[in-house]
Length: 290
Image (cartoon, rainbow, N blue to C red; front, side):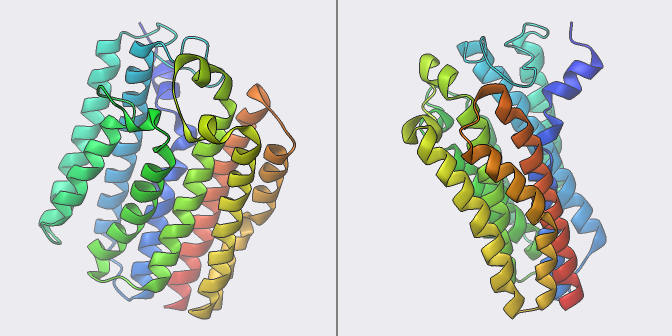
């Protein structure tokens, strides 16, 4: 039976910046529009965290029952390592997704009911990433999903829920945060190319190959900082996002150095930290420039 520490590790806390960051940027954009509502920001954060942890457990369950994680290099997987049963992990996934859905209903009820459609799409996207008979995460569409849900949807949804409008700095922030979130997934899948290729998990990294995946990682990181610079047209305070640049440069150098396997594990942590620092800087900048 899995210990509490193993359940926490199975929730993959290093991925949580991908949930926190878009809410920060969306809230900063709402403040820029003079529409900041603290309790809606907290609700949005709760939704994002619940869905992120839920999708992590769902991936653990789905990959585990397919045997994808049996020889995996990286953080603990509960089903793959057999410290928890598939049923237990599936129940944990549904519980977290259910909490996210409940919080999302409250947010929609206090804003606009069409947010329920967005929420339903997010729930389906979370489960069918690696779940179901034809998971899209096995068809090189994982990065598209991350960009959509942890970039555009999360940032713009957070902004709209508070300010009930959006603007181009919010859109730029959504694209930039989505890009770094994609870079995190690219690094993860780059590390897993050998095992994913053997088990038939056709990620974008498997399709592109290692050299192009490394180039894609660098391009996504560069895009994020380019958009922060462009957003300085609206307010120069968005340049605060560059506090994350040193960490981004360090992790990009590792990726471009042909590092493989365990050598890429620190990159995942560094990329998550980069996203969080970037989001803090950008959110503060937008709020100050409002």
